[in-house]
Image (tube, rainbow, N blue to C red):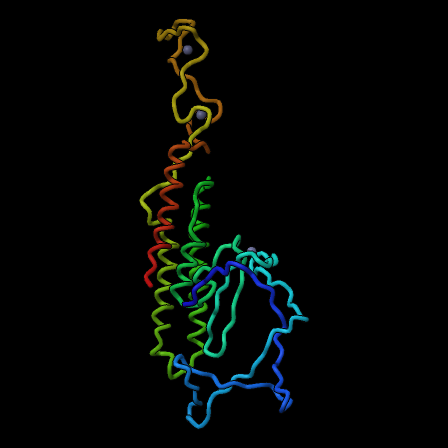
Length: 270
Ligand SMILES: [Zn+2]
Ligand SMILES: [Zn+2]
Ligand SMILES: [Zn+2]
């Protein structure tokens, strides 16, 4: 795979123009040589491969290159990043400033392993703000959907293959594995061992309130200050039910729920 490099000093670039042979009036050509200086021959070996000569025209400076990420000019004399992508025919280079991050594998290859790495780095969930069970469920659903998007890409490639090749393609297995993986992530939520903390009444926090009326009460039913020592919570009428959840229990739930989803995400079957 292509390797990114840092060039220490950006130099001024110029328009390249053909070198004209004054004798013929045509562009000069020189033979292409191998490492030993011998001329390279065409595949049939009938004639040497020629290269047309060009030269930088100092009267035509080119504009500065720009960082593909932040669009800032790559200033002369300053370092910049470059990566050369080879294709079956030709290739091209991409440029970035040194303040922007270097290329991630998935940015320069469409290989499946790079797409999976991308999913795993970009889709990891953070449960720190979750207040409700549905938020964990939504997060798992979102990760599963991202995996299914990749699955759909593979399915499309499979559908586009000539019929005779389709059955034997490794894409079949990849589609199945991606489908299973998405399902595992989706159910990681419900399969996890944790439970969402039960809601209790914020006022009494599930405890029986003590009587606050009497300084001292009596357990004699005939006494004026008769009282069993308890008081009904006015918020929940003694049911102890409510929306309040213990923050420590919530924190443990968030952690475990997020861990379960991330673990399913990181355990790719491919
Ligand atoms: Zn940049
Ligand atoms: Zn209460
Ligand atoms: Zn009392």
